[in-house]
Amino acid sequence: MHIDLRALHRIEQLVLAEYAFHFVRYFVIAGGAYLAFYIGFRRQMIGRKIQSGFPKSAEMRRDIAYSLLSFAVFCGSGLLTSTMQRLGWAKMYFRLDEHGWLYLGASLVALILAHDTWFYWTHRLMHWRPLFGLFHRVHHLSHNPTPWASFSFHPLEAVVQAAIFPLMVLVLPMHWVVALLWLLYMTVMNVFGHLGFEILPAKFLRSRILRWHNTSVHHNMHHRYVHCNYGLYLNVWDRLMGTNHPRYEQEYERICRTPPREATVAETTGDLAPTSSAPTL
Image (cartoon, rainbow, N blue to C red):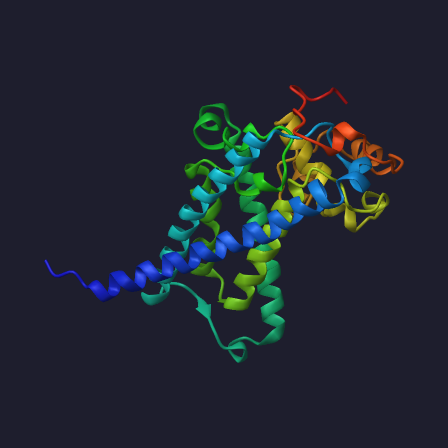
């Protein structure tokens, strides 16, 4: 059997380049958020901390390790997409004049809405008891998450998370810029959801429009209470399906009206153990 070594070398280069991209976006965005909120401005932002206490270093190292493993799975998705493109199955395009600027923006919105729907329903499915331990338990090892937990998935869950892109390029003509913008927005929202601090203004949920977008409090409550708040970007499916935590908006208001204060010495030095169980709202 003849083996095309040049083809294997191209595959190797593609996989390494994609892994490097995932590695950099994770450490720049998640690492930057961690440095800003857990080190640089920890004292100033402590009043907006959603849960009391901080995870231990060992927990954060675990989240980083699982995230790095997830990126290997994501590379498989990228390789599959590249293969589909070569076979003429994928609808990726590279010239803006093929569909124009209006379609470029519309396709980005369509991709975000489709991913939000995919995430909500696959997320709820993975909370089904027979599947939870196999797919989703690893992510819920973080009860008081930090930005490092944003891609901390079991490999099987990583497959589910990565599947949306090759599925979408089968049906949605997509410019490479749309794919890049979506990846960046997805990364920022994942990090934001696991930030551990609420940075949006107090009036955010009082807006008839803005309240349909998720907050850091929203996903943090999912890690605390587990069977609620399943959405990723938008608060549409949770509202439609009645799966928002009943005290979500009150908890957001509580966090946002907490008067600014200086952190105590204990809150600015060393590892602080997370709370063993979430308080009852």
